[in-house]
Amino acid sequence: VIVLVGAYALIAKIENLNPFTSHTTITTTVVLGKLTKIEQVHVATRSYPVDVKITQSVGIIPCFLICNQMELTGSGTDDAIVDLSKLSQQDVSIDQSTKTVTVRMAAPTIGPADLNPATCSITSSHGAVNGVTQDFRNNPNGYRPLYAAAESQIHGTAQHDQELLSAGEQSTRAMLAQLLGVVGVKKVTVDFS
Image (cartoon, rainbow, N blue to C red; front, side, top):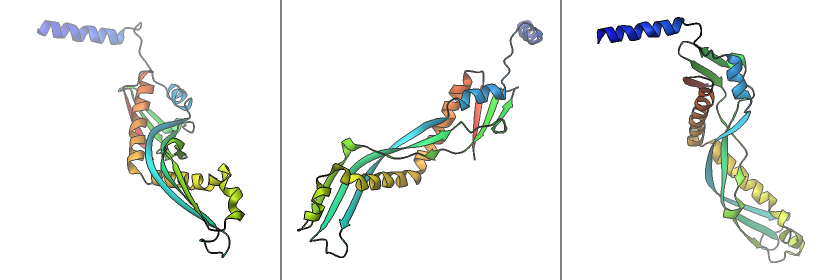
């Protein structure tokens, strides 16, 4: 057994000295080339319920006479996004001996919200004398303020959702490990600043 262990150690040492064996050198250029090619990545998505009410009235006229009251209920999604296009050589550190790469980058940000029309329902009520707003009621574009308010509500909720941001960071780490594993990186550490 001792002879076999010694022989194995000798062969391993000879292989390290062999000029014909290939040694992978990981360079910052290779790492940045892999990462910056991607640019923006949606790394996590969450769905949120939404309930928005808007009242449109005419000046000081009471709402029971002339107004539109609309309510939208449904759901939508928002994403955590990372931008890899801004990485520079100062953001990447490489330890050749352990084939470990450290990437310093901005934490994921929240992208624009996406309202899911298939889950939405809109209800509206109008004042008794709504001849002035008849065009509004018959115009599907009249609901744009309602859609905008719903997307704004979803986005606001997503910005305060620590689980979405945490999932985005976790997903980013896994994605970078998989992506850089192709070029010989054994371990990736991501430092979100």
